[in-house]
Image 1: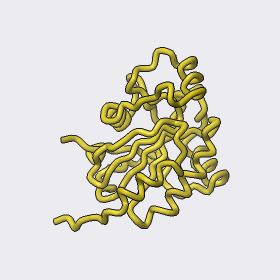
Image 2: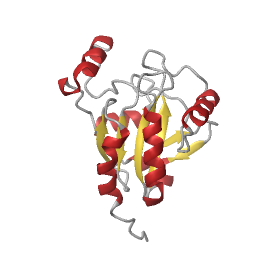
Image 3: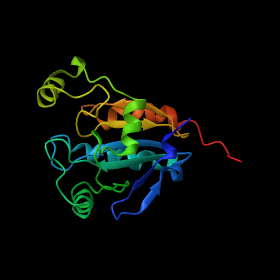
Image 4: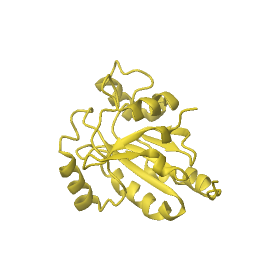
Length: 185
């Protein structure tokens, strides 16, 4: 069975990072952007990171410029923005596409495993995105700050749509992190 641990990503300097390196940790993988109305979610993501990293949480920020070009910077510029504006200390990786023919294989997998339900329950945000992206496929990432929760074994558990604030995810994290890592042989 394929898991997130079967994929590799690139860090902001271009080095390959096997996600198997995160086996035993809970992951929250988030497509991020620095010029989006949701960009202040970096603050909440960093708060989750600082609160839960010692219990086994790793947040991975993955910049994407596919939504109204709201992440136009280079990887170095993105790193500087995250550090100076939000004091981000969790890994922010290299910029990728999350949808379409050039989508990162990781995001193609995440989308297939957790297609999401970006429906009317999201109110005006859903309406705005539906106008901007009327032909979006159901599994596509709809906007910046879509979040994917992955358990310690690399299984994708859930997608949180962009309007879901990091603090709203904390109860799910607490539940997952309550179970310590079993010793692997």
